[in-house]
Image 1: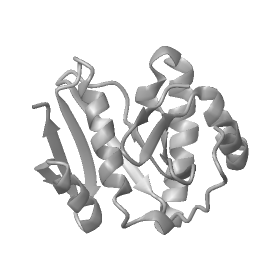
Image 2: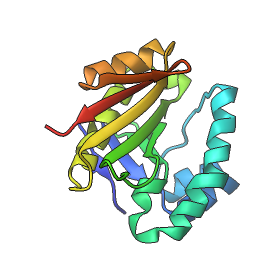
Image 3: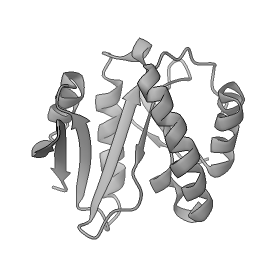
Image 4: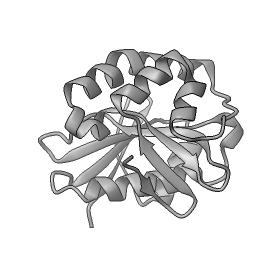
Length: 174
């Protein structure tokens, strides 16, 4: 099984089969990964967003691009010490013609404030930059999402644009 690691975290991209298990039974998917069951607390708004991504993006795209599924799936953010999932992170598809790869992330409410998003984002950006087709990593966040903006600042992202209360941050390969 492919994954990347940071000091405290293991980031596991979900294959099409694992996504199907997730859709049917998250505990079954966690078991297939050898994880301990996670207590998950997610804002209902994000539950809807995750379900939409699962059905309309992750499942069809990982089926269409099995060799490069990592660009089209959710990656489980696993706390190595407890072997539990603490959130998810992932790309919004292949890098575009400007060599930009967009990342989104979410840490479960009961796991926030522990630095996991900062560490996971750094690991994902490093992985993206290991591909020559990526020159810039992009993250969009709500203007009023101060915790997310602090995570981006800690990782060296720079505010690059604003539109309808959405801020766009970029990190350029050094």
